[in-house]
Length: 143
Image (tube, rainbow, N blue to C red; front, top):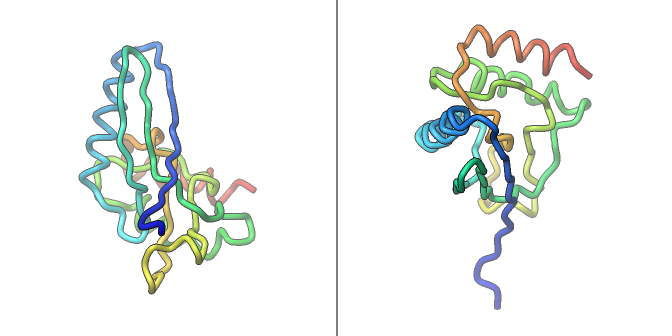
């Protein structure tokens, strides 16, 4: 009998600039402290060896937000991530970086419409004004 089963994704990123790597590490540490209301961050951990960052992230079984679905999630992404008071947030808003969990993948019984943001290395400091401009360009103007 299986009691628990999980899938992990591993993203490996090599950096030429040690200062940029250190900034990414600080961003990931901060990310653990913040919430984005209806937008969830998958469980993750990371490791560093020399100039290489490995992010181990929970695999979210679901669908990327398609062009047809994007209007259903526009307000949620704008309100909870773009306008977030957190000092860090996404620095781009491509639909493909958001996952809607499949019904059979939801570990809770009453799914409440939350989605996941999965591009963790894109998280960093960005002013709300910069986020609004990126949202307009990435989410509203594109595809």
